[in-house]
Amino acid sequence: MRAVIQRVSKGSVKVNGEIVGKIDKGILALIGISDSDNDETIQYIIQKILDLRIFEDDNDKMNLSLKDIKGGLLVVPNFTLYGDCRKGRRPSYASGASVENARLIFEKFMTQLKNSYDLVEQGVFQAEMQVELLNDGPVTLLIDSERNF
Image (cartoon, rainbow, N blue to C red; front, side, top):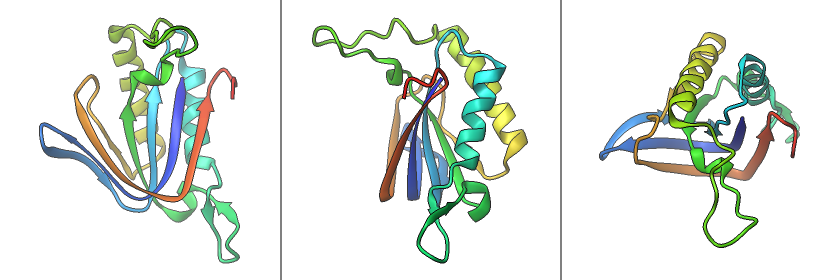
């Protein structure tokens, strides 16, 4: 599982012109899924997102987590995070999960995440989405359950 984490002042996701998820200060997380993902990788990504200390404390040091500031979390499924651009000009998505498996893993991820944290919004799996955000910092981080980066 891969995640692109962006600290935001606000974020939203629309499907067919209608907002399906919206947050103020918090994290916008793009989530990519591979067929090897399981309960362990789901928990690893959830804990990283919730516990990363990327928000400033009273001394302007990044010492606070999403949970500490009680910020919003907007999760957007994004299969392109497994796009491999090393060869040719068209990305290969061979290392990403099949649609059916990705849907099941994403649903499980969201269930476990919502059981761990209350302020969660989400995009729609396999929908054409428009994502808006105001990146704060900017602070953008990459998380990979296989620890490739």
